[in-house]
Length: 389
Ligand code: KIV
Ligand code: ZN
Image 1 (cartoon, rainbow, N blue to C red):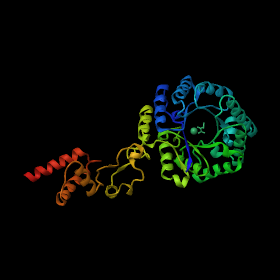
Image 2 (spheres, rainbow, N blue to C red):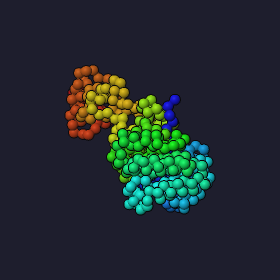
Image 3 (cartoon, rainbow, N blue to C red):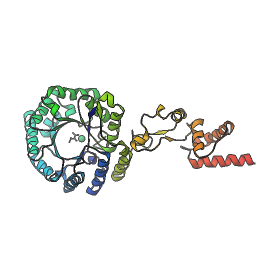
Image 4 (tube, rainbow, N blue to C red):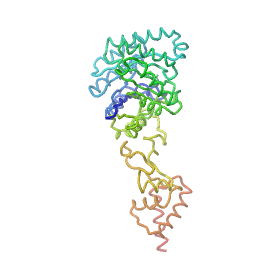
């Protein structure tokens, strides 16, 4: 059996921080229901001290989730944040407080303006304070991707000793390369005492378009939780996209020694729901859930897919709730695709008629972006009229 990788969804917290993506409590509850249908392990529902609305969202999502998922409230390493998160999670069946502090030179010296020792003291105090409320405490080492290895290990050692149950290693700025990020995780696995008794989580941003690759490198090197969002929503260029990283694990489970318990057939529904609630469109060529993710338009590809789907498709679209592959008719399509579509419309043509029809089709296709069924029907009617004349 491969290792179970927990899926920690942060659409409602980090995703919602994306400009224009804010959601009210009712909208967050609708998304949370879909996250439960996806069977995520953990839902980060919000940042309770940030606003009364976010406090209420965390409280209501904790009630909704019951035993079905762990519900998380985010805090800074500040006592009043932790008190507020604990209150929002008071009735949760599986509460988790997620607290943390910046650990890179830029966070320590420029943002927080403290010393390394003070950083560790604050981290430990926050974990201990959170532990006074809940058993399950996750610590995030913000900007871990740019932190000094030895200092990062020192902070993680201190919070593990203080009782953290999960340690989150974020690449907050999406700066890392996958190999290096993997080495960073491996270094922690080899240099922090007792790390095998806690969950190591990765939380990667997409500034260089590598969030999914970074998360998988983390898993290859020992991480067993991935933080991600639907459609990769999130600050700046976004977070790791859940649909990508989960399908990556599904396709390469043996090599990664990993699996998830996600119900992948709910992905397209989840993607459309989040897009319609936030008003943020999904790019057409987005992996897994983009409108073109299973569409084939060139003749060579169409011919291959029509003979055997996996010639050009590594995932069965039904597996992600996307129905069937689409054969899109354009000026780049070949005879095979035209014949296939005409047959679906009920027209069986012999070779000579198909060749004629293909010439007429190309004439029209050069003038239009895409040829639809109505266009084919009118081409067929025209050819019947010509035959009758
Ligand atoms: O990107 C980040 O470092 C975060 C933390 C708050 C976990 O979102
Ligand atoms: Zn983040």
